[in-house]
Length: 270
Image 1: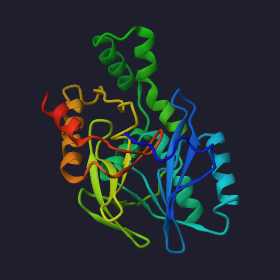
Image 2: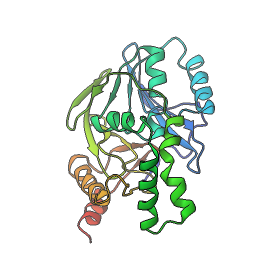
Image 3: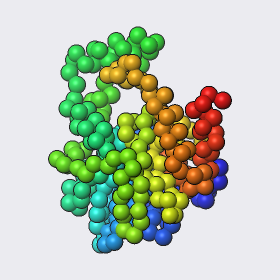
Image 4: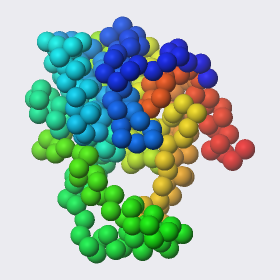
């Protein structure tokens, strides 16, 4: 792997990845303490890829960006890769502020809407029993079983409508064309954008530097095969995207060399 940027920008600072493409970071209240945000010049404004989580600290960083480097510009559209709070949390806030459309997959939009309905006592008990049956301690199962309540605090209300992104759609942003790819395993129908002409892959959390994304079986889909879906998605990447692209991930540093050979070996069990 090769890293064109040895260090990551400070929260709210930007790095120009290529002409008309900016990289910044928004803080997270977790051990993985940031999420990458990318801005693509879109004629008279910027298209935003992912938004960060809804916390006071994240909003402060966004306000500094909007009052500083982006002052006088508008957000033309908000593209969300998947429904996890660190990626979709401030999507509604940005869409409302700039009257900008939300672009995401059906699974991401509807998944967020369903979780945002909250859970009742029966659901919480079912989730608790499921995690206990798979070896979690009572304390751990209790924490995971109520995570949906935390989701409500970390994700703002979404727009009432959205523009759906589907596998192999072509999305025009400014003077660039992106092919929509989707992956599963970490999150259903996670959106990635591939610019073949400039060899750029906005990979979300599907491919990351040195670490793998969380791949988990959830209580609502107890017989699911997320690891199989994840490996199948890596096979799709290996067939559609060459190894010399610049990968722009959802966390940590951009890099070259995501190693499609190694991906294929992993999928084939070699």
